[in-house]
Length: 555
Image (spheres, rainbow, N blue to C red):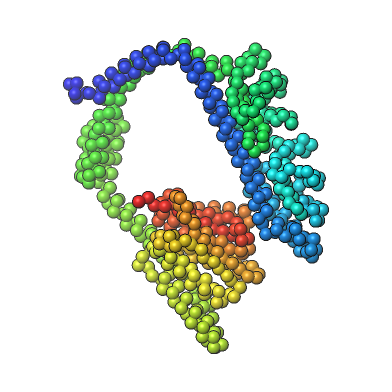
């Protein structure tokens, strides 16, 4: 009898032992729990502050990196000689810089402004928060609070120009507001500037705490102290920002933090007795109504796992498990057919995706190539005819073979190069670069993964641009994933247009939308492990940049 209900008896014994052990341990540890809670509160608050200050330093560092990135921009590199330019060139340079700085400001989560002061033109470029000229002794790459404007300001000083990045003091106040959780109150302190409070802090209480805290801040980056103000003990934690030099200070009244523990102590023993009785009743009910039916289901699942799809459950439980038994029996009868159908459909889906992409080959592309061959033949340019014929044959030999939906990255890049060579023969203003490490060329990828991206760059970027165009294909191998980058210096897209394009790609395919990018995204999800994805962003070349990410496969 005991062996038959061993699990049930074990549950009852565990409930009894657990209740006794918990009550004994609680009685022993109740006197030390308050100290432990105080330490936990201190550690949690400090960790929370570290997260906030680290986030603050990260945001400040990102703003600093914007100025550093601008220094490497080709347009900024023209500022030392801007006084030698024609008036029109100066206006265009200033407009390009203003647009770029505006775009950089919008790309950051923080409210900020970027501007450049040209000492040769004696004017600000961009939308400066202040029109004052940088002082001669302005420190380089140091953040300081301008009390008049309420802005944090940092400069990158150069001989002929200075880059200024600013963000409002309200950014710190908003950070404090988001950090408030009811009991905690926080503020920022610096010896040379007014205190920055959140919307919930009491200025009078801060004025009582701060004089007692200041002597404790000497030569300390972080710490925790107990300070008494107006007869109430406060736990005060402080942490200094490495980038700004300001202290973030957090204070919490100790009596509010410890009051729940005192209430818990009063009700704990009663709750233990009630939980013990409720546990026994629940164990009896669960054993009868849940454990036995689950055993039957586990037995059936185990048989299905080993391929026995003929097993059926005949037991009646007089509850919801009867419906599970019925569904289990129906599932067992259908699962073999479903497995076979799923595998077939998956294989057909992969092949259909490749065939769908191959079917997108534009007949006008072939017509134009044939017209080119005809014209070059009439002109007697045998080299052009030979080059076009060779590249066209290689291109269509690759794209029309349906026997295998996958290939190596090296072969995929080969057909891309064939395609680009064809376009270079037809468009003398087109240039391209392919920089992919040899180690990546052996990777297995779906067919026609890169060529549609190059075709989009040509059609939507280079052909609509006047002058010479460049397409660059790069491969990057990182610790845990690979990247293929296809970028151009075409007309590009606005941020709104890129976001709309990404949203359309995520939707089901419709007749009125192009399917090349959608097809590539779908095939990446099928072929590569998660998380594989496709990103679209502005290119450093000036046009559009499409990045394919996929993780390395674990061996």
